[in-house]
Length: 155
Length: 155
Image 1 (cartoon, rainbow over the protein chains, first blue to last red):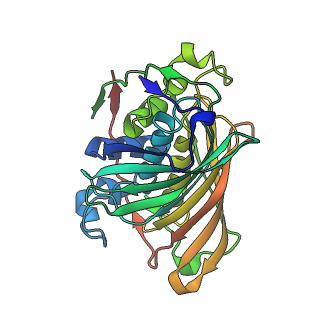
Image 2: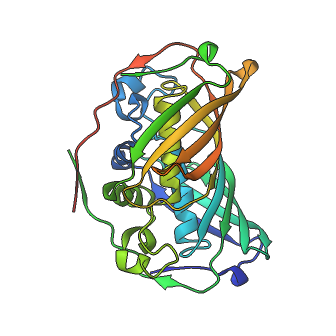
């Protein structure tokens, strides 16, 4: 089940976290979805010649975890995504576990607009991205069954 | 081959486009990569009960196309992604073809920083997202073989 926090129940200072490991499969699938086939993400031999020294995840894959945190956790289902800013601060390596930390920083009653600070850290606690999200929070309480995700086979 | 435009060759006003259809597969894969299993993206019966009336793509899937445009087209390979802002202006339906339009708006010589206006339109020319990207452009010309993307089987 995924449950939301409707606008009236949201409090400035309220926090939520969402964690996910960035796997080899995720990087391949993100390349397919986006069409970004840069070898720095996909080709270990090429990536070894870059300043990163190894394959790194696409920066916006981190952004996709921020959007999932908003959609699944805070405010959760029924949220309308209005805007997002992100600063990419550190490369994400394959196998890193990222945690998105959301904090409600502002509520604007006229449009049920909510501003959230977003920070994404890796398993060492290092910030890989920071930013601000702007959403319209749901008016009503919702508790939905998350759709079962399909099995993926690659190659 | 994917080719870049190094910092010195970039001109304010220079443009590039990148188009991709948003398929059923893309939405499923984006759900797997991000972990966002909201039924508005995945469950046609539930989506029919929402104000959208049908399944919509995740907003940040559009963001992933913006990042691909920067990585594949302008400035292209070797670009370091520093920051991105996005405003989500219209829902993206499954089957929509999105075109990312990039325009170089500013160059800052001290850090080889480049600012690009980003606009994403659907097949009707309607803006689905707008924003600004900040990147460090590559110093050197690069022409790389894009890595072949794997075949994906779902379910």
